[in-house]
Amino acid sequence: MLGGFALLCLGHAAAPAATAALDAFYAPACRLLSTWLAAIFAPAFVTLPLTMPSLAAAQLALFVGLCAAGLASSTATNALLYALFRRVGGSGRAPAEPPPAAAARSRSSPFPRSERACLAAAALASAAAHFLCGTPLALDVALLSSSLLAFSVASTFPPRFNLVVHPFLTTSAVTMGLCAGLALVTSQSWHAVLSRYRSGAGAWLLSLMGPTVISFAFQLFAYRKQLAANAVQIVGVGVGGAMCGMMTAAAAARALGLPHVLRVALLSRSTTTALAGDVARLSSIEPGLGMLAAFATGLFGIWFGKPLLRLLRIEDPAARGLSLSAAAHGGALLTLIDEPEAFPYAALMLNLGGACTVGLLSVRPIRAFLLSVALGMPA
Image 1 (cartoon, rainbow, N blue to C red):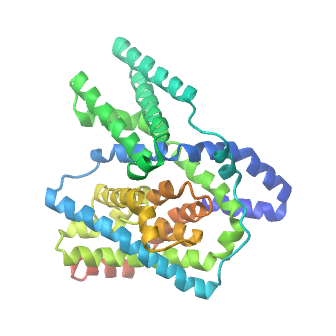
Image 2 (cartoon, rainbow, N blue to C red):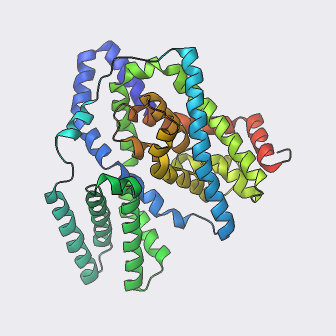
Image 3 (cartoon, helix red, strand yellow):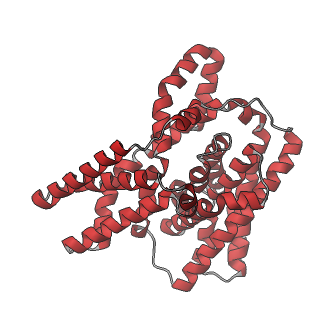
């Protein structure tokens, strides 16, 4: 994404007309991927039970509770860092230029009834083909169609309901329920059906993750003036937020007496799930624990992100996007997708914040310091 954004900026400097034409050409695809963003993210959460090690209930509750508390503390810290670096870098104000995708979304519903009817028909037909002929491909199509149908229907629910139960959660719950029902009907284990989903329908959706992240480059390009004006704040929140988040997580986990492996796993809470495994490996722990920390934080970001921003009285779009995304990564993206001015900052910090976390942990003295904070002994 960052490379694509840089190329678009270079192209705009060299050939503005050609770059504008390229932006317009890819706008429908970017709009489509943005519309289905939560459905594309869902398979990683649905298949989390396949990689998550077993934990005692009390330990799991404390671990998840620390993720929730960490979201609040990190968002507040990031907002303070933004305000601090804003004094250094200036106000960061630039003329607003709403991206075409935002305007297009306001004109018509992206989830018409005809679309839901087609998805329902595809799900029923492919499910029937699987049970009659035993075709694995038909099962994959049935699960894919059902997941997309669940998201399409959930996205039409009243905003008040979706504020509490985000379509991402509805889609994930429906998919997990379908896998559980299929396991019951076919006398298979739930993990076996989830494994099939991960290698089939889930893999198809996750294959769109890369293009989706790259598509964010076009949204960043639409706000290039604002991003450039806030460059100091962006870098400051990215680096400072990553370091402060890991330090507070390590110290809090140690103070509450979590097992050593869970203390270290919390270092992954403010990065993306894609990078959480790498962070866990850098810290020599099971990748599934790092992914659990990242997912739990992201989910709390979906539930409490906007109320937290209101509580902290963070109204500036740049501050909203940077503060929440540096703490809740993908959860911030899903939460702020309806805020066209804040979303580009959240998308940028999704990548930059994760890169800063991995980069800091890759420096041996910093990693040793953080592990000593978490474990209470020289690392």
